[in-house]
Image (cartoon, rainbow, N blue to C red; front, side, top):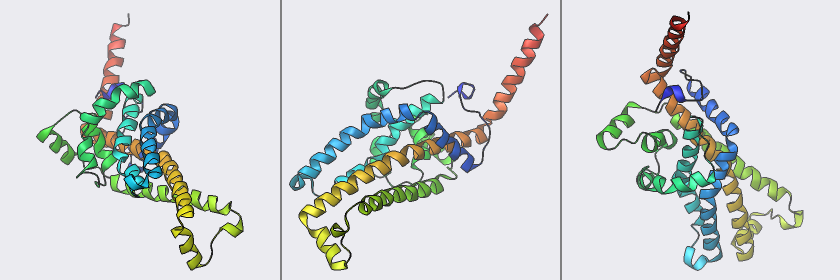
Length: 258
C-alpha cells in the first residue's frame, strides 16, 4: 500500500473524525458502491424468496441467512472503496470479476464461522483482504492494530440499523386503515399466529430489514476502513513520510531551477 497514492488527505485523526471520513467516502462513491452491492445482494434476495415461498424446505430462517452473510457483502464494499481511495473506479463488471478472489482469498470462511461474532469485523477486514499476509505475520498485524473505536462503531451502527428497521415498520403500520390494526394483546397474538397475516408481516419485515442493512452496512465498512487507515497512519507515520517526500520534491525542484 502506497500512502502517496491515496486520494484522501493523510493525517492522524480522532476516531470519530476517521468515522466521519468513511461516511463522506460512501456519499462520494455511492453509485459504484451500490452497483457492487446489488451484484452480491440480489442472488441472496433471490434465495430468500425461494425459502420464503417454500417453507417446507427452508423453515423460518431466511432472514437469519440475510444477516449471517454480512461478511460477504462487506468484502465487496471494501473492494470498491479500497480502489476508490487510490483513484480507481470499479464498476459492477469489475466486482463480478473480483468475487472469486474475495470468496477464496479474504478469510471469508473464517468470517462466516468462528469469526462471525467478532466486534471489530470492519476494522480487521482490510488486514485479511488487502494486506495479503498469512500465518504468524497476519496474527502479529492483528495484534499490533488494536482497532480502537471499532467496538463503539459496530454498537452505533447496530442501533441505527434497528432505528431504521422499526421506523419503517412503524411508518407502514401507520398507513394501514385503523380496522386492520390490532390493539388488544389477544388480537395482536391472533394476528401474528394467523398464517396469512403472519406471512404478510414476515414479508414486510424482511423487506424493511433488507433496506436497513443496505443503508447502514456500507457506512459501517467504510468507517472501519478509515479507522484502519488512521491507525496505520499513527503507527507507521504516513503523514510524516509524506511530509518529507513533499519537502524533498520541493528542494529538488529548487535545485533544478537555473
